Image (cartoon, rainbow, N blue to C red; front, side):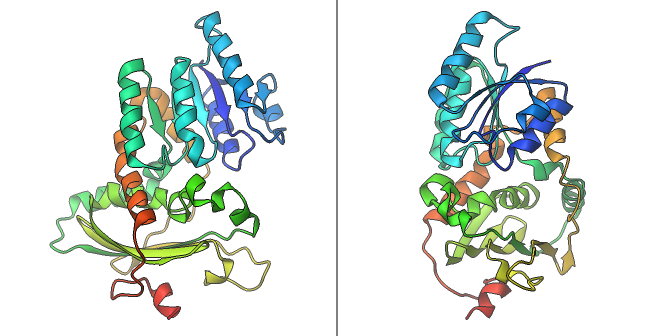
Length: 316
């Protein structure tokens, strides 16, 4: 049994991590978040020490390190806002812990180089949550694509609309410097998946960049991808009114819809099992998608082209 500490425990994604840590037979002994709505700890870690200040949290885990192997923190789970990931990974390394970090590991590709150097210096490792690589439908797709010897590139349309209210833009997620924008918050898993299956990026275009929606085109080694991401519920084809819940997730490959609407609930547990078995997704696994989201974030919008997603063309 390993001892875990978690940062960002009051956040949206932390319950999946708390469940995964518990399901894999491990123990949460410390938690940190500036917000104190953390009653969920009573379900998964009733004896865990909680700290709303990072300074006190840091001091506590350092004290545990000095107590010895049985008491120290062996793993950090990092669910904090994107811009804090790098600092919290470094905190984990300082106390001799490995880290499991929510997407993205960092916002800028050069920060990966610094973390790789720290891995060499400390002997600790950081692993990313790239859970779509463990989805049965995605694994089956990769196996199929690997076997096919298509002469041309696959034509792909990616559409992901996950409605969010006004709170989103007022939170850290709506701050480009803190979150990396929509391509980071809701797109990076899909970009990682596409690169993993269809090969490295050979070119890209950015056609639309707004606070609530963004769209562009990717040229991969084995695919041409038109993509559209949105948090505006009015963009969903299932939209029926102001209060409708209308998440829309679609990947069409050569005219065929990929069905992966279910199977998401236990992916974090599967990822923890894989990571704790020494088969987690490390820095180099994350590098291509982090480089891509940085390039998209810093690209100039060129408007509608022949490569634009149909949703963008309809806005003309």
